[in-house]
Length: 113
Ligand SMILES: [Zn+2]
Image (tube, rainbow, N blue to C red):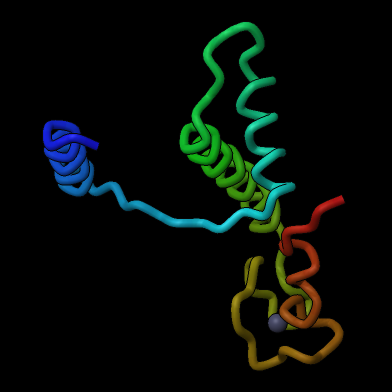
């Protein structure tokens, strides 16, 4: 990178920090990287593919919206034992088979089919 490019990069990072953006470093294995690049491309056939960052940002937003829907469905139910609105985070009855905390995480844990 030449001096101008470095200065531009530095200015861009400062602007992103000022906007409240945070850089996150993630380690992907070869398969995950291949899947990410594949998805970036096939999501926009015949057009400029999404960048890795764009796709990850959108996946976070899509995933978060999905989780919010799941949580609002849970909120319509309550723990059979303590009658707290779900999802219960902590409960003195945890361990009791009728308390949602004991096995409720099985409803919210992220699984890959
Ligand atoms: Zn409970």
